[in-house]
Image 1: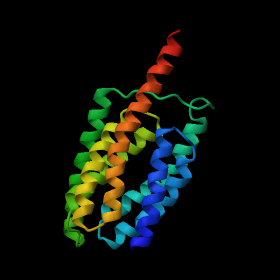
Image 2 (image 1 turned 90 degrees about the horizontal axis):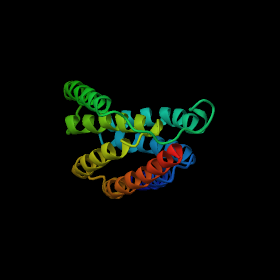
Image 3 (image 1 turned 90 degrees about the vertical axis):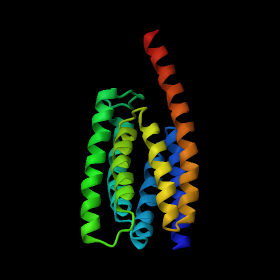
Image 4 (image 1 turned 120 degrees about the horizontal axis):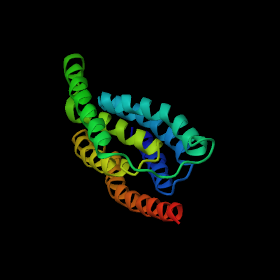
Length: 191
């Protein structure tokens, strides 16, 4: 799996760097990376992470469309999400993760069902925020990346662990870049 894991890691790293730069090319590269990671995670019995790749693959098309034309036919700016909505989304994700982990424990040989399910659920929230160009996607990615480092190292997916160490630090960079762009657009809109 190392060759496949390596290709998946490279495509995913490129996708995330392009997301920081707000490039539309992140979406086709993201689709390739997620398709490859589906098989990597399936082989490692990380079923929630494998299912997450299906979700990621499907939302790549939506994100591409929204970033291109989702704001009344034009490209949307970076926006903020209310704290209440963000808290509700994360709480719902954690509740779903608990339910998913119960099902995985009952019906599969998954070794790390709960943390894998939390990665799944919080990634869904973060990806939806990213696709909607919401600034708050980055702190959620920080949490997801840290948990992913722990879970994927427990399964011996060392190239993926290396990727998630990179993604952990990249999320801070993305947050900073997007916050700067958000503030710049707010100043322009206010002028």
